[in-house]
Length: 592
Image (cartoon, rainbow, N blue to C red):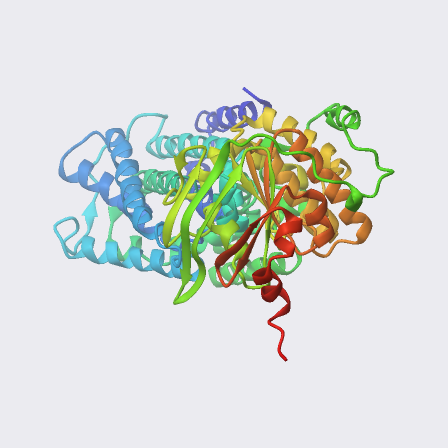
């Protein structure tokens, strides 16, 4: 066990001794409320804070848990502790059912997801109120015996809440420091790119939703016994989701303990003002504090104290000595004294077909971006993909990498049919890509951006191995000094190389480069050309879209030219550049 887990367990053990200190029962009830709100805020954060899917439906899962425990204990005379696993299970099933539907619809993100989850709260409340589950009067738990876990009933309730809070803290920490947490934070920053980099976004969101819902249901089950009388009006309302949102934002949603800090602060504030007979002033104070935090501490209390650090602690820059791949490559690098554009591409000898695209088509609402394109990429070659703006080059990269689904045709990679597969499966098969406009994960450091791809792409490494792999490729591309910087701190040249580094970290067999040279200075272009040569020397096959013709002539074994979504020529660069149709596509048809 690491220090964080030991610390959580030790703190829980210390707090568990409170009922035997002889303090008034008030303290047990007060600590119960802190634990109660900690569970709800932490569980909300597992989905909404980590993945960015902002939910206002936490009250629905909390309410399902309350009514499950209340119904089983009061109506069916189940032992109360036996009802809690069922409460968590039913809440998780509701979350799974909802997520299985909404997460398949890409349009349901952001505000639409928030509104949908809010609606679920009132839908579930209406069903409960108008069926035998409630029937109108509610469910009384006055006759339900409190499990004898402590010296008194209030102590037993507190100990149940404390145990659930410790469990939730451990889950929140473990999720964040695991591969699941890394994937969720990538989804938060850019879900489409996360999927293309190998993150199984649908499965991860569904798992996070189920965990979040189950813990909310557990909190609801315990709270049913605490309030002793459960009604739909008091359960299915906007209070729970709004409160947990405020707590999470105040504490910091990008740190596993942030919602716990926010829950403690707000619960204490509300009690302070309520005890002073100023409950409205307490709510106003919470609102003022939230405004101040949003304006001056947008990452919350913990985010303020851990400034410049991201939430994926499993990918910290923990390396006493970075790998020495750059030194190894120095022996194989081509002499820098010869200008890159004057060197002929390395001879291509392996005729094995790695990528076989047949009649590939892609249409966007009637616009035919790709029109039955067929081409083959041989293992070990560099294929340049050329064409005027709007010819379909980037669309080809997007379709092959799974960013867009094709509307027709087949894509065979090393004999495996890729058409129709989700993008993360394509990445795991050994295809990596860059984006024309760099799209790094903004809240992750450079090192974490690269290590994520090493974990989820074709390499499929664990955290430690992924970090070592990231250091290797950062040194290869010269970004090792920027390992702990955020992407916003990089210039365009560095961001372009970060895109390339991420692609290489997955150990791909095929690399798709989308205008990696655009916007670079001549000297930076020369550096990038040498880098691409070294990538090929290490066994990768490359398809690159580029407008810098000297780079194409220096690197490409063959070039393929697209125009209006059609393949109009393919062959050696010199032959293709003399093709009349290619000349017409670039320069137009001469007129008398």
